[in-house]
Image (cartoon, rainbow, N blue to C red):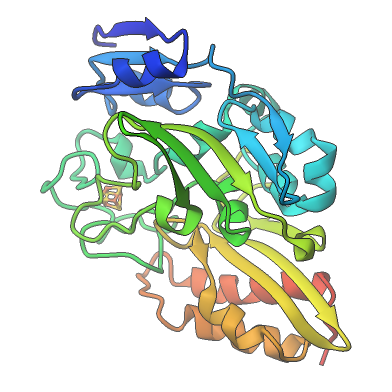
Length: 328
Ligand code: SF4
C-alpha cells in the first residue's frame, strides 16, 4: 500500500475542511475503500477518518419518516424495529448483502459510495474507463455475465453493486450531504449517475462533500414491501437481478406501487415505466408481467448478460405476486 496522510476528524467542520483539495477520501467502515486501496485502485493522498462523528443514530422525523445517520452500521439498520415494520424492503436488502461481519462494519454512507465489482475494474492489466478514463472497456467483448443491461453506454456497462440503494431508490430517499458551502439534499434518483462518457464520475457529490444522512420519507405502501435478490449462490454474492417492490391494492386496483431494480444497471434503477403502467390497474399477474416487459424493452444486452432481461421480468412478476397480486 502506498503512503497516505491520515486525519481523524473531531467534528464535521474539520472533516469538510480536511477534504479540500484533490486526492482525499473519507473513511467510514472501510469495507470497500480499504480493499480498493490494497488493490491500488484507490490511491488517496489523504484519508479523513469520519468514524468519530455523531452520525450513528436513527431518528423519527415529524413527517413520519426516518432520518438515518450516515455512520449507522448496516446490521443496526437492518435490525431496527421501525425499519423492519415500516420499510421491510430496506431490512431485507441489507440482510441479503455481504456477510454478518461485513454488515457489522459497513455504514449507510459507505454503502451509497461503494464501487462496482466488475472484474476488469480490479485488474490493472485490463482496459477500464472507470479506473483509467480513456483506456477502453474490456467488459464489452469479454466476460460480461454480471454487467448491466439498462442505462449503459459504450464506455461502461458495469452494474451497481448495492442492495440497500435499490430499496432507497424505490422509497424516494433523500441523501443529505455536507460540503464547503453548507448542507444540501439530493434525491436518491439524482445521487448516482449513469456512465455516459465519464464512467469514472459515479455520483452527484462535489469534491470534498460528505454524506451525513439518508432520509426515508413516509410511505404507507412500504409496509407491504419486499426485496428479492437472485444470485449465483445463497449468500455472500452480488445480485444478478434484484427487485425492491412495494404494493398497495384497494378494491382490486393498484393505488401505490414502488419498483426498483438492482444488478441490471450502473445505478439503482427505478422502474418508472412499469410503475406508470401498473398504477390504477389490476393487481394480477398479467399486468405485472406486461409492466415488467415494458420496463425491460429498452435493455441493451450482450452475449453474456442477455439472460438478465428475462430474469428481471420473472423476478419483478414473482415479487409483485408475492405482495398481493392474484394469478390470472
Ligand atoms: Fe471498467 Fe466499466 Fe468496462 Fe467494467 S464495464 S471494464 S468497470 S469501464
